[in-house]
Image 1: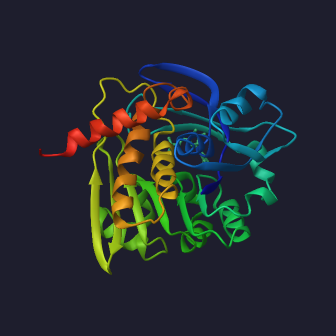
Image 2 (image 1 turned 90 degrees about the horizontal axis):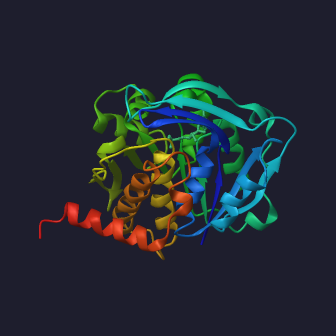
Length: 304
Ligand code: AMP
């Protein structure tokens, strides 16, 4: 099974209480791909500038990620800078430069055409929609977005939501998107916009799953792992999405039980992402560490 993902591949400058990093490899598609690559085949669609070199490319290829859909363009790669000095659960965006993404016209390599799963990672909803429409034969489509697009590009985002099976967003974004403070009501309002399954992430406090099982509303919740140090929350949401959707894609059938287990793998990958700056932790992970952490989550949530 293979997932095609479109989204930002970026350079990030990040400041947290643990320190600072200038221009480390980031981007929603990057964090998602690295996390999902531990579960299934991943193929990326994005654009990068002349500042993206073999060292950055190697971070993808070492994890077996197909980068044939990463286009090289004249100019600079997407750049984002953010800080978490006041609140580790929510980034304060200092700067967003779309750079080469401003004129990007995504092309799907023919080798990606048989992908069964599509993930529309955070990027301009116009691009998300174009990729969705170019891949009509996928079985399951999930996506993500953020306040930047919810606030200023809502009509285009609403079109994307109509084509999604699953939406993953954080709780502040869910409230803004729905215009509703109560999360259960916000979830219902968002489900009416298109995605029948909604995953709302609560930063260090875990995530909630809203979907329907046998026609009835169903609700499930996973905790976040209590960690003694959070170095850099950047990419935690995308890594959660990579673990969640990567695990789902690797299952023979996407049953309600598989969705619940996927929530745990999302939390597992999110908890790793925050332990180092940028992609450092996930890019150097192995399956034994993932299994061990999954077992810690089982211990954390079982009565016996
Ligand atoms: P998160 O998982 O929510 O922490 O996402 C972090 C990543 O999102 C960073 O690596 C950024 O490069 C990327 N990012 C930030 N702003 C945007 C945006 N407006 N569109 C797409 N990607 C973004």
